[in-house]
Length: 296
Ligand SMILES: C[S@@+](CC[C@H](N)C(=O)[O-])C[C@H]1O[C@@H](n2cnc3c(N)ncnc32)[C@H](O)[C@@H]1O
Image (cartoon, rainbow, N blue to C red; front, top):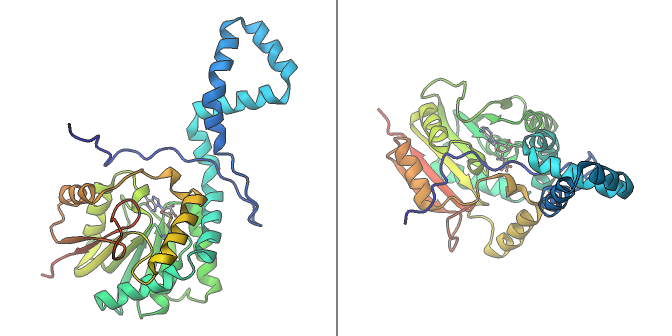
């Protein structure tokens, strides 16, 4: 039997994970799960007679209202995703700055060394707080444009770029990988870390990336920490990524075969799929694809 196709399906709704500016976190993504247990109780009460259920709710007080809120949250996940957006970007910024602080410089160095691209235009798609964009610019003569769909991520990235005094070579704008404002064949290098699992239609997104890539240019798209991070460090960092729960809103699995199918469907012929580092399985977030657009 053919496995269920996960490509080009909308990703699962987000969990709601607000955080204050001070990093105080209140995780309420457990609420919809709680609702799964509580909803039958509410339904039974309702079936037993509306008045009795209402009276029970009033008597039970806050607990009943919490149950009701959980039920509504699970019934309308869309409203949860709207609440989540801004705070998730802020939470990821703190995580990236503290936990991944060695990942971005090493990854940028790996990309620049492997492809020997030192100047021209670099796009960082799904740039989030902009740390890879900044490292690419700081280690080369590249002009970098970070693109992210989330306005809150764009605001945070702009602030980070200004703090690092890189605003003359790094700019950040809101945009969707599925329809970028850039003209055909304009980018010398396109990078994207940790974003493709969130794309609604990866085939469409890769086609768009290929359109924008210059002939002779290279795109390095994927997820993971790069070869510079040791396997021991990776184990620790992976556990921290899992604990932070950032991947909850992304598609669950993206194997090498799925990546191959996606690229073929996008009409891309010159590509190489590789694991994050030696010994990595090359699936979920630890996978990269190198795309080359033949010159001429
Ligand atoms: C896990 S974060 C990674 C951020 C950054 N690349 C990094 O490694 O620090 C994923 C980012 O992809 C962005 N994203 C998701 N879907 C996108 C889309 N369709 N177009 C552009 N950005 C998108 C999200 O808003 C989020 O900032």
